[in-house]
Length: 260
Image (cartoon, rainbow, N blue to C red):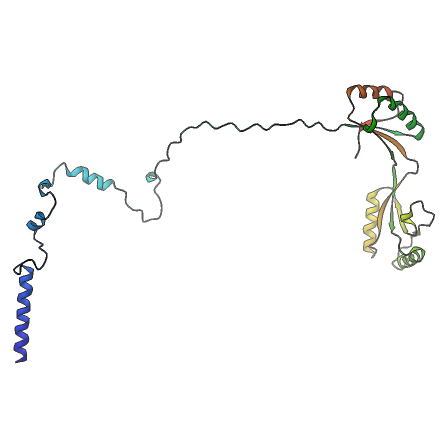
């Protein structure tokens, strides 16, 4: 009995499905036949069927062939790259010319080295030029030698202790600078040697460091009798001509640019 019921249900279902597929049940499903599709188009009268070899199909085919295809290689074809847009020539505004102010260097002329007597004579003759602040008189001393020394500390007692320590290190050529030294900063210091050039003094400093002495210093020793020099700033042409005339009375004196 159950098998008969299942048979009839399947038969009825197949019949309903057959009727729906062939349109026997009305508009229950959307119509898929070609005439009905054409009827549903907008302006069907504008459609026309062309033969396969019609020339009207050629432009469309060429357009499809010329359409760019996506590049799957990740590289751009240089020939397919768009040409750069032509640049429109423009007239660039000229760069503003910077205003350059001619900086007038402060000229300085140095005359000398004068002894004390000649410096007084030269100064009295320069007074007629009325240079005022433009004239500077300086005392110079020539460097005669360089001394390697240890600065003073704790007076005489400290100097004696340092002398004993230096001897223990094997340094015997030491001299305690006396209290009568004209330079108060050197009194009771320890002199380790006098050298004619700074290079020789530096070389000895390096030797002392190798022996364990690290407090040694270098000081320049100057001549006792100084020389006078005159520095003249921003001389006018007339003042320079007058200076040359005055300088004629001191033929041994040198005229040069000012030193630092």
